[in-house]
Amino acid sequence: MEISSHQFHLLEQLNEQRKQDLFCDCDILVEGKGFKGHRNVLFASSGYFKMLLSQSSKETSQPTVATFEVFSPETFMVILDFVYSGILALTGQNVIEVMSAASYLQMTDILNVCKTFIKSSLDINEKEKDRYLSLSAKSTNNDPARPSLYRSRRKAKSNPRRSCSLPDEKAAAANENSWSSYSSCLSSQVILQRAETQLSKRGRKPGSARRRRRHLGLAQGRDFAQYKPTKAERAGSTGSASDTGHLSRVREEAEFDAENDVDHDYGYRDGSDTVPKRLADYDLPRMRFKCPFCTHTVKRRADLKRHLRCHTGERPYPCDVCGKRFTRLEHLRNHFQTIHQAGKLICRKCKRHVTELTGCVVQQGTRRYRLCHKCLAEANFDSIPEDLDAEHSPVSSTGNKRPKWALEEEQKSDEGTVEEEPYNLVVRHVNDDVPGEVDEKVKPNLR
DNA sequence: CTGGGGATGGGGCCC
DNA sequence: CGGGCCCCATCCCCA
Image (tube, chains in turn orange, blue, purple):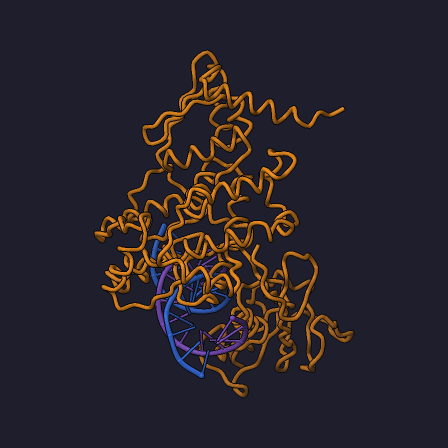
């Protein structure tokens, strides 16, 4: 027989012990501020502490000391409170830093909740946008009541501990009405305010966005936590070795701001007085959309939507021929044209320009390219490397418009010269949330 | 190991 | 607002 309240009471007791510094055997120093905790609780909650404590597990007589300089004490407080209560006090203000810290501490539950929080915030319907954008110039999102809104929603659930497992899409969907409107309006304001901050920053140094441009290159499975700085950034970075992932980005941002004499004190917290004045100094568009995952801002919501794919890993455009997936239709088209349709009128071997008359298309697996007649005669296919996909690739020698996976009976070899256009590009927009479901022009689903 | 070039991915912006 | 084009940075493979 399971007594459901036990877990809650146990956690409550541990939290009391923490507050009264009873049996605490772990000291955590965050930017100089000290926190107390229990090794077993921290071990069970964080991958980082698991690693740390398992290394120092032999010296159990001495209290463990962990020092962090990569997030603020306030942020760690939010996380520690969550560890000991199951309640995560997320706000539009702190979500980015909490997510960064959770990533650092390898606390995937918090990470997922933050992601869900942010993604829900992005689902801004027009009504709310109009309403809150008009408010945003005057209002502040520092209302202390707001985090409690999020908490209360979570508390409404039967088990407070379970309530942190929000990443469950169904749960998120079920709760959408109850909190996404809140978070989206909150986020609208955050986005606008931060956008204004960014505008002020960027406005001082036109073109700096380009110089600071980062290749986010987040392929599927690559998390933004694994962000790699560019060569220039690596060379110029003065960040601590422990500052990994987006934390280093945050730090770089700070460094950039320092370099460029950016004033962070915009007075947003106290209201609107300073904001229009500052913005008025720069003749820039009023609206920018701020990416919740990074510092990037864009003019149009559609561009933000597109940009977000580099964070979410969403690749809704699969190549029907090789299965490779792309974030954009145009990338799929480019890929298809160059890889599967030999779109480039260049001899692959001698790199000379070829025409339909002076060259021919060579098919190798699913890959097609052109060779001039001379190179074709010399190569005789021997020097052309095998295509890994060759064994399962359809090959056409007819050039008919037909389904690309229809393997022709008379086909004997994977290689050979072919006529034009055996593959047709079929544009599909795949919804990743429903595995296997393929639909024409399904709207991208931001997870 | 290194440089070159193709492939890919992301941003700006026009239509 | 989506599609598409252009440009550029980065990755990655290969000589």
